[in-house]
Length: 321
Image 1 (tube, one colour):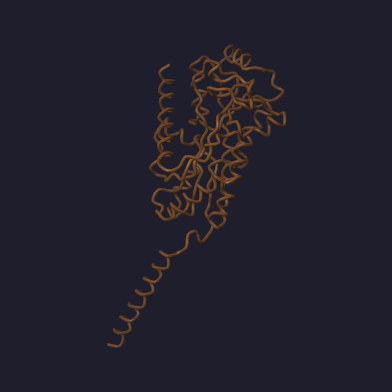
Image 2 (cartoon, rainbow, N blue to C red):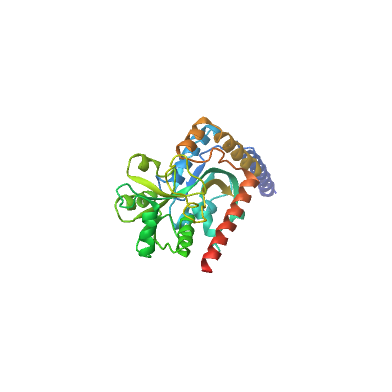
């Protein structure tokens, strides 16, 4: 009988302890530990720079450390997989670059937009084709003539197959401008390939390589936009070159779908404050990005879907030629 009473008493004690533990967990202040910021690209590139600019300011808003974790590979899929393998508890966030989003436009992936909750698009900027400062090509017309006369001979450094870079290069091929695309997962390697003469041309968002341009190591030769860029007014635009393609670069902060609503709101509110701070506005200015880059919630998801459909249409058109 005593043993039975003891067993019942222990059972009650454990039940009470478990209940108290669950209540304490539910009432846990969030965040109570560091929030990892996963970047699916190597250090030094535009995604890395964007994440670090955001992370530094998020630390103040969240009251905890936000370490940036670089996980490059597979045009960003390695980092995305790492984020989706983590618990949906708000302690892992990620940076989704359109280089990776573009993969959804070409073939089925093991992940999709529905697997994320989008906190917001934090940067938008045009891309361009660059050559080394000492390149023999001084204008787009000179480069265009060379590419048309020697199809596939000229190497262009891109972020990865299936990326907007690759989609753009495939589009150019349908216009008689055939490059040999060479992917580099590490941004530093991509830049070095052009500076070292291993690639003839570089595809890059304009803010990523600003320091190389200002240091007289690179220069843009074709701006992928419909209007002249005020920072590079003498550079030919894709519209002027009769090439109807732009595909701007965008990057969004995301979390795994299923993250508790209260934590999702905490992160969303913190990010909304970050993008309004002078330090972040100055970062956008340095990157030559749109001043109104921030797009939040459902509007961001809608824009993502529209961009995937646009890229899918370009791919379909390219395949038909």
